[in-house]
Amino acid sequence: MEQEARRVSTLHRQIGWSEGKNLKRIASMPTHVFSILRQIDPEFGRNSKEGKAKMYRFLARHPMFSVR
Image 1: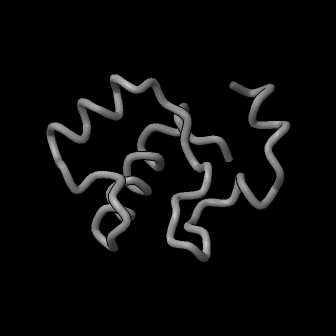
Image 2 (image 1 turned 90 degrees about the horizontal axis):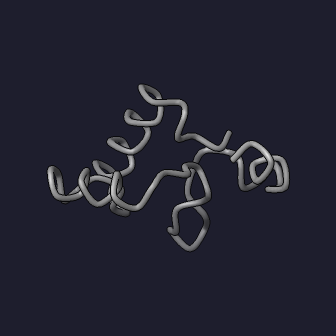
């Protein structure tokens, strides 16, 4: 994961959303972890103000999934 993060440009490592409202590459986690989080809270990781805030809070608490 560290090797992959080094290859990603600075722009993609910054936390945030693109102009097209798509999630930039801010996290790298197994699919089953993301799926479980979405089952618990369907708003998690969605392109909404609340969904973005939940993703950022999760990454702040679990930096091992962040690619910054």
